[in-house]
Amino acid sequence: MLSARGLFQEILDDDRSFRLFCSIAASGEAQGGWENGRIAALVPESMRYLAPKIARHGADEDKHGRIFNALLRKRGLQPVAVPVETDYTMLLERRGIGLTHTKLRHDEPLTEEDILVYLSHSRITEQRAADQMVMLVRYFGDNPEVGKAVKMISNDEDNHLAYCHEELLRLARAGHGRTIQRTLRHCALSEIRVYRQVSLAVMGRMSRILGWPAPKSAALAAGIHALYAYERLIGWRRMVTLTMPERRDALGGAATAAPVF
Image 1: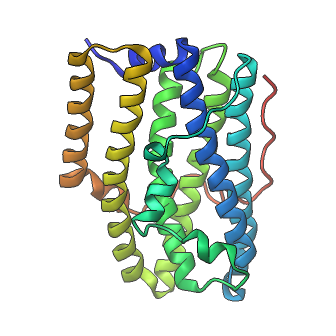
Image 2 (image 1 turned 60 degrees about the vertical axis):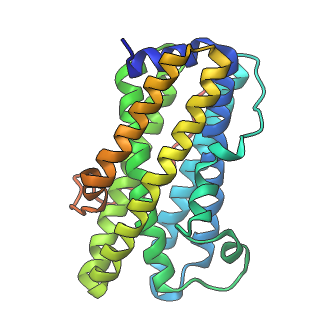
Image 3 (image 1 turned 90 degrees about the horizontal axis):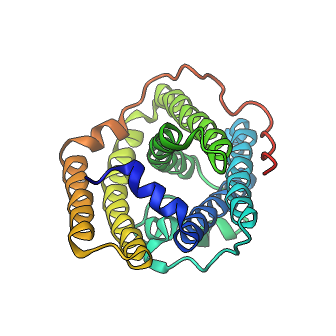
């Protein structure tokens, strides 16, 4: 019987699949670090109060990238190039989700609407990241090799998600509610399509590396399509809901240091 725990254990136990998994994760986190760093530098004057929190968000993402690379080094492995079809952040940008890299590479200040787009995009992607890390902590939180890493990253992702909720609610109260809800819905529906695409690509790669039989690969693909169908019909609504988090001012302090492995 297929289980998420069993699948991830297979990936963890094989150097080739572990190398690909960590390389994809490290690349995505490093990309997020750069994006948040540029946004923090370009925040409009009317919203400069957000700059330290955005910078903290970027510092956390950079730290996560270093953590995944450290896990590779601990096994004596080097990162591999990320296959284009598994590049979640790039594929989101191609669908017009979030702020484009072209805009972020310029030195012109962003607009308030740009920040609404950034926070809405982050609320969706951080929900995905937080949910994935909760699953990894449940299965591997006590694992001597990766447990410390997944616990730290999971805590950070919960902070990021709380920050997005709090700031979007603050901006909704300031009169941006309709724009925020429209943007959230657009981001959510696009993200679930990209997530299906990336999930199929990653599992296809893992299947070839680990030599999964055709029925197992077909069952995994069917599961990915079933999740997409659920999210497309109902699940997306959870991703656009805003509630005041228990963790208030979650990114108000300095970023924590990466653990030593």
